[in-house]
Image 1 (cartoon, one colour):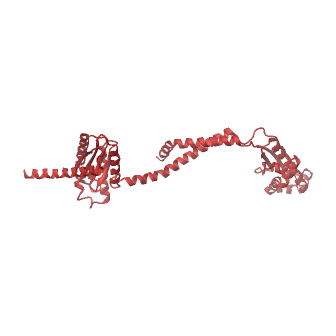
Image 2: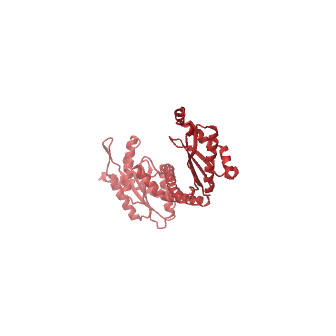
Length: 366
């Protein structure tokens, strides 16, 4: 259920995801076009005991020392030093200011006595020459300080044929993928922010006890429909539930809510998709019937009255409640004031009740 919910979010915001991915792709292509190609050359070095001391009684102690990472780490720090860099730059005929765009990184390969030196920059020949020069300077410098170990080339650096950056095809694919992910995140976050706002907005329009629209919103929709009413086919029906008049103030809220929700459900079952149900007062409801001629509106209200004549069963108390509905319907004339139309509708409802009680009194006399 949760997965389907997120899928629906993404389907509604597919265009946002597409736009973000497209922007990311264009940004990637643009950056690849203006970026200066960067090349990288690598050289590897091995640190081992001096051959001259291989038969020395101290060789075992030297080998034990070599196993300690502090020794090779010290050599890597020398290789990374500014002094070695300056000497190497001079060796290849460059000033250090000419090499500001070049980076040097020497690291110790895990569980080994091998150092890896990489140099990156915009010129493939310079990066390889600089890597080899740094290696030679490090070998020369450390050889004067420490004769127990020898540092030597394992692999020399060669000029790279292709730049490692930018790689338009790879970068474009990654940018599109990142754009899709970011777009999806934006869609989900936007939905998460919008949903509470929609829920609050809807809550302000709904009567919580009955789940029908409240009277304020119902009258606003009535005014909007009247503004479009040119045929005189805008109907409104009022339904008063006399059976609830003496009960609703004393019933527990949960039972009141169940009753009113059931009334709303029955009303909606008798209406079309564009019709609307509102709670008019504590014991009365209203239905809005756009584009409905008077005869059709009367038939609709008669169906509603028939449906509400049946008692509603209360599950908590196992009792049933007779609603005793009274209904009236009027059709709003073009350009008729809403207040006048509402007064006519309420008067018709009152007349319907009076007529019913008059008929009842006449029947009793007979």
